Amino acid sequence: MSGLDDTDLQQVQRELQIQSFEPGTVVCRAGEPTRHWVGVFSGLLLVRRPPDRLGPSVAVAPGGWLGEDTLARFEPWADDVVALRKSHVGLLPAQTYFRLRERSLAFNHVLLARLEQRMRICMQSVQAGRAGGADERVAQALLGLFDPVLHPAVGQTLRVTQEELAEICRLSRQRVNQALQRLGSLGMLRLRYGGLELVAAEALRQFAGHGVNGAARPAGARTAGRRAALGLDLGGGGAPGSAASRATAAPAGEGPWLRRRCRRQALAQADAVGAAPLE
Image (tube, rainbow, N blue to C red):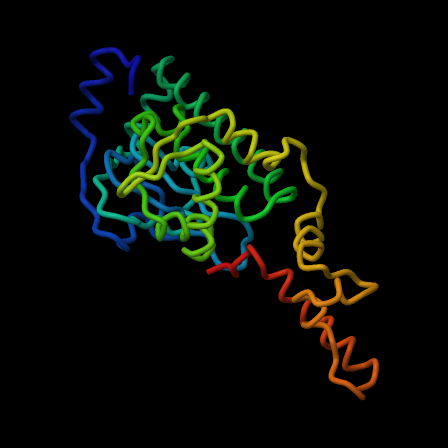
């Protein structure tokens, strides 16, 4: 709310409602009218997408706000907004929001900057989803949470658990742990007790968009890489004596159909390496 004049700031302080929500509590329910602009003072909120919609869910960290796009369209909430941890949330009435939007140039500058940054992150997320895997998905989610425009109160240290990140990214906790260990080993993050410290924002941004080698990977490259690492390809069963060759080898005396079945099973296992199912 920086930049508001004294009159507007006093109005916001007078009409802003502060409420506390326990973990798992629904802050805004899908289908209900949008009556407030919602801000996070502490804790962590999640805009929970339904299972049939691909991609990570949207998380809102301290300093972040949500609902301006829904308010602008005069539509009900499209998804549930839930508290991932105990959160203190500010609810600014829609009437106050529209009044500020009509009369305050500074408020409109804030809204425009937020909308532009959110669109930029959304486009980067789509690109990362096409080119990368689970590690890139975790990196992209962290970029959004550390973003100084969307979440100015976070700074360089984010309070978040692996379970919370797993729900945001729609991955298993074990897979998120592997991704964090890799990002830490690359010098982008430091794992702290109860949270993460951002060390190299630009390196994390490059990784999220292009992977560790700095070049976008074509669709299917991730799966092909895992298959190659296991010694698998469509034309053979892997290097002699490798785990892949043992996985695709049919028992002696059996026909080609069984060898094809074993190879399909091994390929399915290769596709599962490094990518847990969505929760």
